[in-house]
Image (cartoon, rainbow, N blue to C red; front, side, top):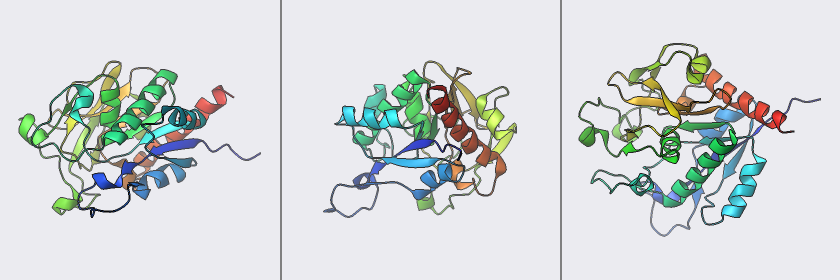
Length: 257
């Protein structure tokens, strides 16, 4: 009998929320293929999730059929989602994506369904649990080092910006297997106050929290601020993070079969 391949929801974003998109194109959703390849390479089947924020019944039906949820990187979250007014340095927003991903994150937390948030996805996880964000690290967090090594600024996506220190005993440490790892850094926002039930599991040299996870040994609910999908093919520690997520998704389904 063939090994069961878990079905992983991968969220998308509104095309028109991206800088430089010409006006007049039909309203569309897109996503970088690296994200769905990241789970496919370790044995999962990806399901790209449209932005069904205005059709909660359909979104819930889709959610019920998947075994895990992956929320990729993307544009800034609307500060209204965590009770703040917009800062002048706030970037592009995608309200439909905010609503869709927050619903999925909250459902996954409630059901202890495996969840992996990457960059923006870690911020979604934090906000879903009542946490807040720095809207612009350079102007709001005076102790922050440079974190915005964007390709649009001339950097490669695999540019190693700094190391993070991973907390001993955390689920992330078990997956990554090392105390420190070099990471890329493509964000101008960051985690400020940590949401309820979450614990910080990786920090940058400037003290900025770079990863969180649910404080529950029975749940794989993890968010990292960097982009590990860039290194999956070249770094076995990173590949193990995706493999643990996919294995947890398989186990979640088996437990409910």
